Length: 327
Image (spheres, rainbow, N blue to C red):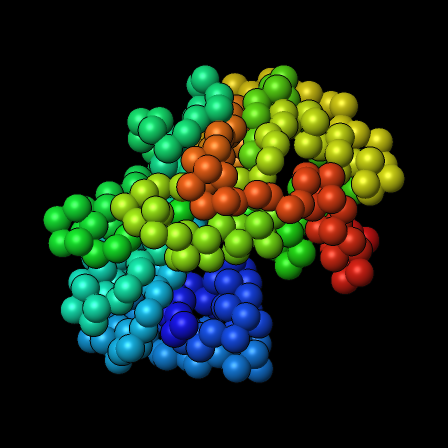
């Protein structure tokens, strides 16, 4: 199989490229000239320089491709104007879809996010739960997902949408702040801590992507790929603390003052392109539930998570420890 991956220099895309190469597939990754590509090259992955916003740079990249995994995205960063999210998540996705159609790509696997569903008031949510995005990242990811499904319905492009839960595992740096603050006894829970949180271990997610590309039943469908269990924030922080050998967080503070403070700090920092030390999205972590039903992926794809949360937390913490990140 000839596979093409966008977002291959990112955490998830890099793991996908690695698994594909290990399985003996020919792998091509799209990268910007400013991206670090040495690790991908060392694994025998062909690098094509380009940008999802530049349709002409995509055509040579998609020649003779069997399966396209579209993972490229702009994660939330301070100071980026909203049109950048539109350009990458909507226009960039449309460029990918159009060239895939022109080149006769056999399968188009579109990476979306569970964030398109926003706060889950009656967990667990599933693929039929109405959209409820809460910020520009989630809104534009929703529009990109809709666009991909429209290409399936109207132009018969064999599209499958994958919505990952919160991704974690060895190599992931986004969870490091949580692990480190718990390790140092500094983690404070805003509110009750009874909101739900659903994660997916990186290896399980990559398996989900590959199953989505292999199974014909997946064409035209959306699949939530998550771990076997979701837990409350209190449970999650306790599990991490136990693995780290420290006391679980006990200090709870009211949410409202931090919501107000987050808005204020954002209004000052974002115009200056400074990452706010506290912002509304971080407060949302404590107030918005994320819990999902993965039965469709199990039924249609044969997806079965191999890493329970306790094991995944241990492997992630071990990776952090070995590199001195928790000191």
